[in-house]
Structures are given as C-alpha cells and as structure tokens.
Image: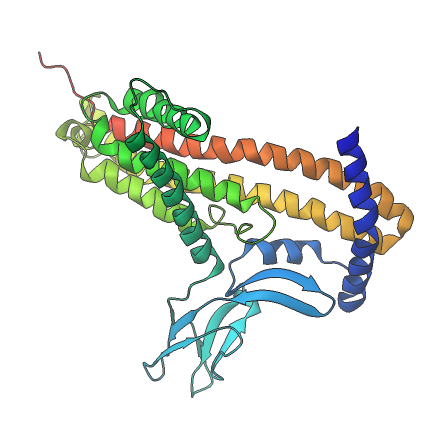
Length: 350
C-alpha cells in the first residue's frame, strides 16, 4: 500500500505539468501527430535529447564528420555549427544532405557519431566494466573452494547456460569452443542494448537493435561464420544434395537453387526478426506515452481516463519488453548457433 501511495502522489504532482506540456504541444502543432512523434524517437539523430523545459531543449550535441562531394573537404562540427551548404533533410529521416553548386542535392560521405553509435559505445563500456569486475573476482577467489554469489554468480549461471545448453548443444562438442566467444559476445551485446533501450533517459533510450543497420551487421557476421568456416559436407549439401538426380541436375536443378537461396534467407531472417520485434516494442511504448498527452489535450476528463489506461499498459509493456529483451538475445544466439552447427555436420562414413 505504501508503494501505491507513492505512485499516486507522483502522478498528482506530475499530471498538471503533463497537461500543460501537452496543451503547449497541441497549440504549437495544431494537435499531436503520434506517428510522427513515434518515428522521430525511433530514428537516429545527430544529438542526444535529454529533456525539454518550456521552450528550451536540453540535448548533447554529437560529433558530425562529413566529406563534401563538391570540394572533397572534410568537416568536423555539430548539429549547431553545420556549414551553410549542408542541411538536415526531414523527408529522409533527418539525414545530412549537401547542396551542390549546380543546385542539386546529394548525400555526402557521413561518418558521424550519431545517437545509435554513441549508445553502442556505452553498451561496450558497460560490458567491459561488467566482465572486468567478474574476472577480478575470479582472480581473488578460488573457484573450487568458494562459489560465486550475487551478481558474479548470476553472470556465471547465465554464461554457463548459454555456452552449454545453447552453443555446445547446437554446434557440437568438437567445434563449439571457437564459436563461443563470438556467440556469447553477440548475446550479451543484444541483451544489454535491449535493456538500455528501455531506459527512458540518458544514457539509455536509443533504439540500437531496432536499427536495421545494426541487425544487418550482426546477421552478416553470422553469415560469414556459417559460410566461411563451413566444411565440405555443408557445401556438398547445397550444390549436390542427397536427393533424386532429376531434382539436382540440369535442366531442373531445383534443390541446389533452393539450398543456395537458403544461404541468404537464414541471415535475413535473423536480421528482420530482431529488428522488427525491438522496433515494434519501442513503437508501442511510445504510442501509449503519447496517449497520455493526447488525453490531456482533449480535456481533464479524457486525460484522467486515458492516463489510467496508458499507465497500466505502459507498466505492462515495459515488463513485457524486459522479457522480450532476453528472448530476442537468446533467439538470435540460438539460431546463429544452429545455423553454424548445420555447417559442421559430419556425415557418417560407410
């Protein structure tokens, strides 16, 4: 009961501020455009927005590194000091474009540190701190005489579960060791990025694994691990599978085409599955958040009713997204391990 009283007290304190903010937003834009707001928060940006106080926007400018197509000159700046011949194209999700002397526009070479890139660095720093702390514990203690407890014990349980029950069982005892570092890194990177994406304030909130470029790179790494190190039986099953001759020889050759197509569809499924699930979760949470402001802009009665519904659904969705954060990291690692294991199947010799 005490916790419920605290929650109600916080709502009573912040609801007038929410109502005022919603009314100002509605007055400025002639009504809330929820799809536009959701897409704006899901897209990448060249600054990290912290908060809005009245008409003042508090944000952290991020380094912009671009190369001019017209002159070949490199520019190092921020969103507040962008050269005159460059501009942010809102129709292309706020990406930087360059105005050429002939009046045309072109997308310059852009190596900027965007919000997603900055979030990836933060995730890497968090993971380095976590595993450095765990390694120091093992250096100071004898693992045989003293079992780890608390946070270190939880990490050992999680690593052992993923390594033994997912990686080892999917790839096989003969080959799993050389893939364990990569697959464990992928698992903890996706899990940490997903959890930090649910934090609504700095240094969290970025949509890392809901970015198709990030999931494309992760899927590409798995594709390389599958096809670059696959054994001869793997390639034989693709180009000359054990099926009737008319299914794998000219002019039909149905099975080799299907198997070769599967080389690309497997990583594509990994990319889309992770991207779509995380982006959808973020979109739903942001939509329910916007409903709060939409209700207050319609009046006090609508505000109280929609607020109650939105807060309940937000709590439910955030708890569900915590579960999804783990499930998506687990599924990506499991499918990657299964696909790698299929590339190392040993055929019995007669």
